[in-house]
Image 1 (tube, rainbow, N blue to C red):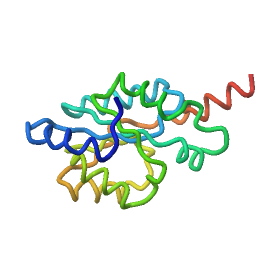
Image 2 (image 1 turned 180 degrees about the vertical axis):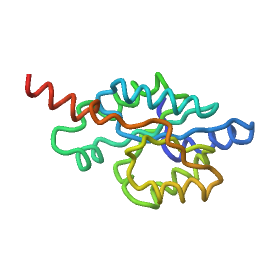
Image 3 (image 1 turned 30 degrees about the vertical axis):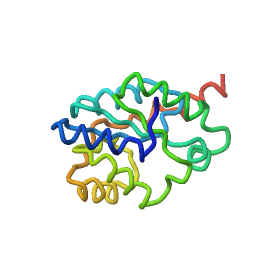
Image 4 (image 1 turned 90 degrees about the vertical axis):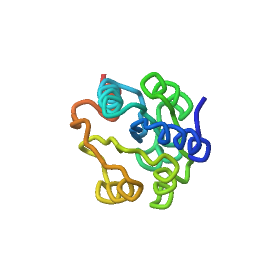
Length: 157
């Protein structure tokens, strides 16, 4: 079962009330590969409960370009669920500050886990701190291993 921002809110409230340390991670996770798995494992190690929010197919196309995502959001959520306690399927309009604010407000994570190449770090830090958490770089980005690199290699073989 995958959650929406609205449906995860009561779950997160109960987890927070019980003293669980919630870690939030977000991303596309297209063609789940070793670097994604390393990131998710490190994020999980940062707390008690890992909630992963997976971007929509529409956002993947806009952000990553034509032909992306390779896997649908539903399949990406299924794959990520092997490493997360809860998975959120983000809506296609998850592309502005208020959307991120609604996610942080619903979950109120103690840790927002990111990779070293994450964009908009300053605004994401402000958002997580607004709800009592903190941003933590849990994984150093390896540019040699990415979905784009994998796709480029396959296209040149």
